[in-house]
Length: 262
Image 1 (cartoon, rainbow, N blue to C red):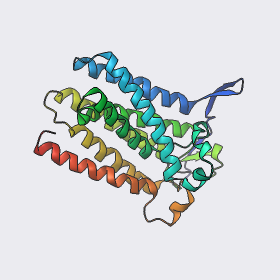
Image 2 (tube, rainbow, N blue to C red; image 1 turned 120 degrees about the vertical axis):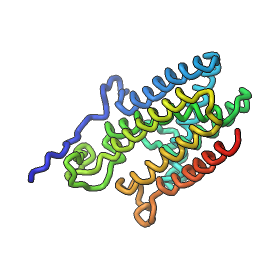
Image 3 (cartoon, rainbow, N blue to C red; image 1 turned 135 degrees about the vertical axis):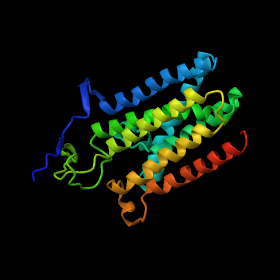
Image 4 (cartoon, one colour; image 1 turned 30 degrees about the vertical axis):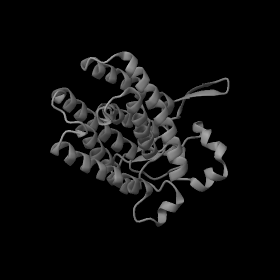
């Protein structure tokens, strides 16, 4: 039987001029903030909150996401290299953003936002993770356009041959697997919010987000290519070890939110 695999050879650059380039990844990354802002606008309007507060929240989110994702990649995956070349941490255009680092950056930035604006921390997290799940969809599609973070070899008919990355055998398109899972998580969380806005206990949506998203990430990691050399000798890779604490925190918050109001 002849299998028709997908020959993936998309140029990650949309257009280039004057030494600059517009890339799919950057456009999709920006789209995650754009659509996230629109959805948060609806949420704030639904709850009678001013747009000025949302603008402040957006600034905290952008800073937390970019700094956290970049530092997470540098410190979790290539600490020796970046400690020898610390100035290259600033070279975001060279690639290297870690979702676990972004999660930590977002948690910290929103903590400071909550304190400064006197809003319950879990209340903010319950709403912001809805659009974070959607952002995960856009970012993983950006990884697909970059022909990066793909899976191990497969003989399934939807296997992708990432020609631009020098591959000649089909691999699992794990970027698509993750993107679709994150899109489903976004839809489910948003529907829960819309239907139960007035009865939600603080931390409930956030706990569902942590459990679902990082469980998905944990299991998909089993069919991903090794990202850095030291993972080859590990029983679980770095992405899986980093996912476990988030899932456990999610379980704790879920139980706690159902036992009492927090």
